[in-house]
Image (cartoon, rainbow, N blue to C red):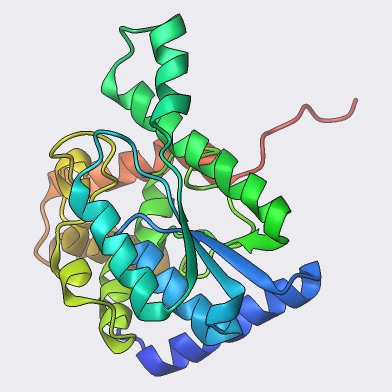
Length: 256
């Protein structure tokens, strides 16, 4: 796995955030606070870039969200001393499924929650004239572990070049609350859901394969030598390939 200079990366990201605001003519940033490490790091970096008076945290719980998610989001907002709002998305999500498709599975409901959250963030973006900062990391963006036009919709991705394991290292430097750093990553879209269980692979293994495959350009034999299995490599290759459409603008026909 690559070694990065954490302090230099923090400085680089804060400069990037400042440039994005300057180009757009905005002064404020809005971040959806999930109670997880990615949104916590994004919010903390935003505060370093533009100050706590210019960062708005929005917590968007669903009725079945784990109570720790909201508690940790509140803890983070208090530590950063940023203004925050809590908006329960349950009535919005439930009215659709209760009215039109009460038999929808957990995946569909989870995707709806992600898209409702982003709709709210963009509406508040217009209200407060604040750019929506994405909270996606490179690991999840590369394998498509996100909801299209949901949690991958944003004005810019401050940590989109960092692998999940690197986000964790930066979180420690930024003094993110330990309870957020140490808990199992989860999108909290349904009860007992964890990212690694859903993906079927740990972030440590995923990051190792992605780094050696994409950035170093090693072949399968060389990656096997790093201690991963062929099945794990095939899983990652398939996830990267199947999610290619999520990383591109929608295709259009060529002009004839």
